[in-house]
Amino acid sequence: MPRAIELKNDPSKWQGIFIKELILKSIRNFFNKRGFHELESPILAPTLPQERYLNVLSTKIGDQEIYLIPSTERYNKLVLCAGLGNHFVISKVFRGMEELSLNHAPEFTMLEWYELDHDYTHLMESTEILLLNIKNYLDRKLKRTVSSKLTYQGQNIDLSAPFPRLSIRQALKQYCSIDLEEIQTLHDFQNIALKKHYNNAKEFDWQSLFELIFANEIEPNLPADKPCFVYDYPVQLCPLTKVNPNDPLVAMKVELYLAGKEIANGYTEQTDWQEQERRFIEEQKARKELGLPQINMEKEMIELMKLGMPTVAGIGMGIDRLAMIYADKANLSDVNLTSL
Image (cartoon, rainbow, N blue to C red):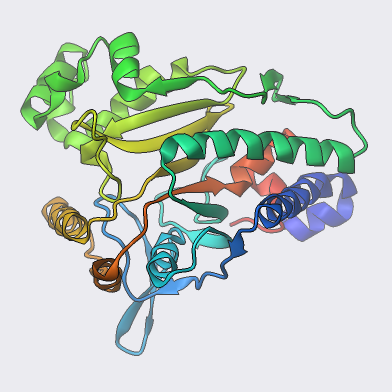
């Protein structure tokens, strides 16, 4: 049944959409009070930062291929180099995919924000404050008792800070019996995976193998009653992130999980233009070896980084998934006006 007819026939189905509307208002209030600029990001881009498994949607204008942005990161980095400072952006972003699911759609709403002179640990603290601020805003607007507690699909969740924090080193050791040093080469990683009965391990590259083991052995063990930060990801997965100066095998990246869903992904941004260019070239080469479509190399960002990029931390948050959880809905379509 078309979504508009559903809404017409059952006005209660507007609830998820209205919850998302209130979340967007609360986010803007949050950052406006903190003096952040709001950036209006274009949704078309001639080039993109290189990531080996990025699945993009594109179109043509004349003979030029143009991409629908998978995140606003390209434009965030350009304005940071140009001197904008602390800012946030709320925008539609787009990802190609093989199939739709309850938690995935090719078009969704993304919040990204960037804070100067901070690192990913500060982003964790800001995120804790933001999520509770949103919950309290919804409570007041919906005339509910203001509380840090919510219920999603029968699971009680406490949004009070601090959220549990789990490093990838800890997670691999605790849930997979793997030391990070043991899996630095693809050959070693595949052999360990074979011993764990991933019988098709030889068919996977390093990143795909890590994501498989993470999904099967780490993600199901993350806390259900609290949001959880997972941080310090292997450098192999983080082409736009600074390496942790205290541990050269990991990058200063953090992901937030809430109700079993990845909600946000942030990091201490790479500011060295030479290292960034090297990683882009490495990712582009990997895409070619994997037989994936080539993406036009992001050169404008590199040229601006040569002029100087400030120390900054940035994070992207999926608003649709967040709205699903706050509205206690099981499907992304329940918080949007239309769905494919």
